[in-house]
Every structure is written in C-alpha cells, then in structure tokens.
Amino acid sequence: MLTWVRANLFNNIFNSALTLLLGTLLLYAFTHAWGWGISYAVWSADVEQCNAARGTGACWGVVAEKYRPIIFGRYPFAEQWRPFAATLLLMALLLVSCVRVFWQRWLVALWLGVLAVFFVLMHGGVFGLTQVDTDQWGGLPLTIALASLSVVGAFPLAVFLALGRVSALPVIRTLSTVYVELIRGVPLISVLFMASFLFPLFMPEGMSIDVLLRVLVAMILFAAAYLAEVMRGGLQAIPRGQYEAAASLGLTYWQTQRKIILPQALATVVPGIMNNFISTFKDTSLVTIVSLYELTGSLDIAVNSDPNWMPYKLEGYLFIAAIYFVFCFSLSRYSQWVERQVNRGKVH
Image (cartoon, rainbow, N blue to C red):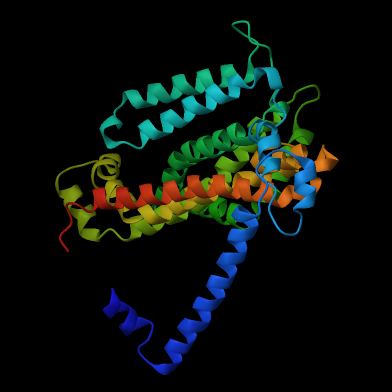
C-alpha cells in the first residue's frame, strides 16, 4: 500500500503538492458535511428544533415525519399495507429472477402470477379490497413497478429490433432503423407528453386508456430503442465464422440466433445492457410531469403540503438520492457478477 502511494501520489513535486491540496479540500468538505449531516443534525420530527438548527445542522426530522407520503405517495393512508406488500412481492420476484438457478421456463408463469397479484393489491376492487385508481399510486411502489415492467417489456422488443437492424432483408432493416432513430432523436419527456396528452386526442370519442398504461408503453418503446443499439453492437461483434458454422450444421435462422449468436452477443454487451437498465430506473422520475407522482414527485407533494417542513426539502431529496443509489449500486454489482459468470468459459 505504501509503495502504491509513493508511486502514484508522491512520485514528484507536482503530484505531491496536488495530492496535499486535494486531500486538504476533501478533508475540509468531509468535516463540514459530517457536522451538518451528523453531528449537529436534528433526527426527531420536531419543527422547533429544526428551525433552531437551520444553517448549522440538517433536519432529518422531515424524513421521520413525511416518510409515509414520500414512500407511498397519495395512496390512501389506511390502505398503505397493500402497496407495501405488493412492492415486497415484486422485489422478491426480481431477486429470484437474478439467480441463475431459477432461470427456468416456470419463471415466466411466476412473473405473470406475481404481476397479477401486484395489480390486484394496488388497484383493488376485488376480494373485498377498496378500489384505488392509478392516479393515486405513487412513491417507491410506482417507481419500482415502472422500472421493472419497462425493462421486462423492452428487452424482447429490443432483441427483435437489433436483429432487424442487421437483417439482410431491406424492408425489415429499414423499418427497424427508422424506429430506432426516430425514438432516439427525441427526449423521453416528449414521448411521455405525446403518450399522455396527444395520444388521447386520436382515440374514438368516449374511449380512454389509463394514463399509467400509456406512460408504461411509452417507456417500453423508448427503452427498447436504446437497448436495441447496445444489442446490435454485440451482434456485430460476433465473427462471421459463427454464422457459417451454424449454416454448415443445417440450423435455421432462428435456431442459429437462439442457440449460437444471441447468447454470445448478449454476453458481450452485459455492461451496456445493465447501464440501460439503470438509466431506465432513474428515468422514472420524469413521469411526474404527466401527473404520476413517483418517488421524487411524492416528496414534492408531501413537503409542499405542509409549510412547516418546506424549508427542509433538501434533506428529503438526499433521502431519495440514497434510495436511488442503493438500487443503482445493487444493479451495478449484479452486472459485474453476471460478467464473471458469462466469462468463465473464455480463455484470456
């Protein structure tokens, strides 16, 4: 360790001075952040104490006071056990899906069953549960649901788009290219606006599609376009000899793709795929602009509805940032594990 420090941080006068300067700045920033966030912080939901500590310490009491509306949004208070149970069930399904031993055909049926239970718990209207419309869904359950369903829906669509982009058939290749470039040429906010406000204008009079479903479809279509380009890179990295070997064995196009090409291509671009998953998870914060109050939007509603806690919105945002970090960091670590699994058979 000492050898590495000397070789990389103090190997000459300039680097030594730069190391000492940056070290001093980091120490200064850390001590002030520690004092504001820990030492002088107020942890209880006491407005008077928070007001007295303003400017010197953080007020984490806003999280203690408002954590339920932040986590569950506008969902009825007495029924919040339902989104809690539904979210735990969905997260358990995601964890099961991440373990290789469970990658069996019955996992598809398990997904369908869990999603059915999730929507029954969230929406209600059956089995004696009070009906809660989707405009009252929010917070962490909505964030996880949108991210999970967007990824699950976008992945197969992205595979077909990527195959279409490298297809030898001009019509299929052109249609896939136009779709990908059209979607990638506009920001997600525009797609959400079109799905929420413009699409209903083209519907027959008296017919309406739930805004949550429209937003979910928009996110799936958007995520698929970006994911398809990542997969196309993996497909183009496969040597031509792999296709020729498959043809010599008499395999059909789809047999070649399913058994030889796609497994290698997807394994090659695991970091890019996971990067898209993380981006999709964070993009769920944009649905606030179409009146779906996920985690970030729920914070605004929870804090702005109570003037006493409005000055402490920063602490609320830091709380939400910590939640996002936990999920995104977990996805990053899982990506590294998948990379190690798919690279076991490779000779370096």
